[in-house]
Image (tube, rainbow, N blue to C red; front, side, top):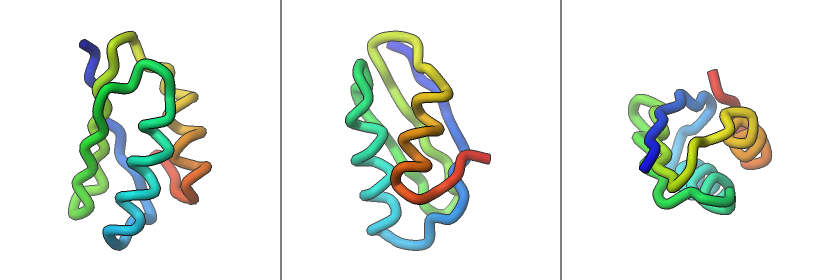
Amino acid sequence: MNTETFTVTGMTCGHCVASVTEEISELATVESVDVDLATGSVTVTSSQPLDPAAVRAAVEEAGYAVS
């Protein structure tokens, strides 16, 4: 398993968390997504090494930014 943590800006509520979680979860090999709304920390666990650009694109698709 591979785990990486990203900082996502712009999330303000549970709906934001759900949107980010849903978009990242759709990436191939992603096993789990844990979002901490208070800190903006998003921890992604996958079965293969993650492509940071793909995670960034998924977060942007949800309407937020990786800082």
